Length: 172
Ligand SMILES: [Fe+2]
Ligand SMILES: [Fe+2]
Image 1 (spheres, rainbow, N blue to C red):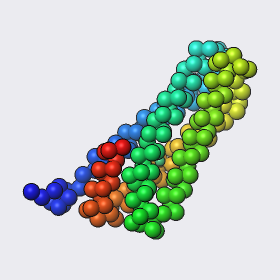
Image 2: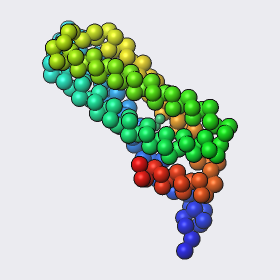
Image 3: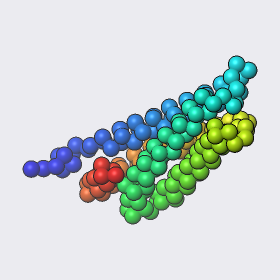
């Protein structure tokens, strides 16, 4: 029996998964931005324990999601690009560096919020807003560039390379 690829039908479900995960990360970062912005208004307080706990938990969730998502991309897609499409290697390397920066900034903010929630000093809201702004902006740009790169790479992969990508992603 012929595979879907041999019949000329390309399975793009792997791509939907990437987009669903990007949307989920966008939502959590937009929610974090809203909560931190609210904490800067006179009706709320940057040291409100409930808001600090919400932000801390959202940041923990975001970090877990990012580690899982970035790990799958690096293992299943970036490594394949490096192996088979040298002209796209530089773009893949830059996107992988973004992963490090995104995790670093999220982790730094989580530490700050966690310390404030634990009573270890006040939250520096100005710095927190700056970090969340930079991270949200970088994430949006990263996702946009990445989707373009993944799509271009997949179009250029042969049937075997496409099957390998889909299988590696499914197993991650
Ligand atoms: Fe990524
Ligand atoms: Fe991604």
